[in-house]
Length: 297
Image 1 (cartoon, rainbow, N blue to C red):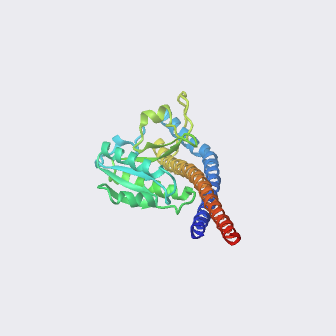
Image 2: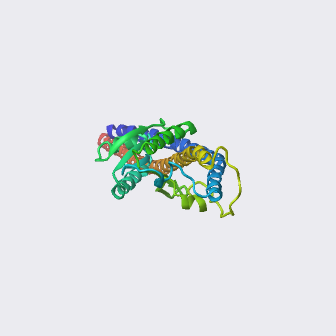
Image 3: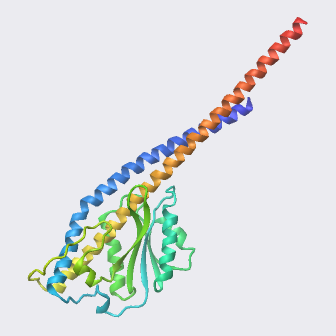
């Protein structure tokens, strides 16, 4: 009977774990929908800024700006923004980012890390790469103000000459099952690419257009430099929200798999419980019959 009690305790703990994994699955589903909806709602605004910058470059010709590499000399350091999660239980979400970042750090010049997420901070402090700054969102939906804070920080490091370029590594969500690390160059701007088309991954392509004649006040450079920080904020924000949605999708898959495993274990434990219980009943019946036969004899 003691064995039966142990099995019942084990089954109860597994049932409680199953409730937790099911609840986390539902929560991640709701967060995923909210994240994708928010990204879709904010996309047109930053897409319009991107188009305006491309139109300005096509119509105004050469624009002098500190956001272009050739317009100032910089130190040979690469700032790598790494987007990870604040919590675990997301399958291989963070591990994939870690491997990808290590590959990026090997190919760039003097990498310096700007971390987003507590999991990334715990991992990269034990690597040989220098961590310059760390941001955390306490496991919630990223806000535009937070993206603006990050963009202001990397812009200041770039314009001061600390970074020669800035890249961001995050998880791109192709679909709910295909989540892969991705990399985008934040700074410096590639003037040729910006004149033709804007990069993908969350933003619409800009179709080739004929140059338009506009008067930019106070100057094309002034307008461009005013739009550039907003564009960078939009790029960072889009990556943050997409990484957040990818995290929730990965957690959904992990919790779904955990729930499946819990059900399988619970089913096996139920069979073991029934077997032990039936064995005990059979033994008791056998003992009663044997005792009855002994009394009759």
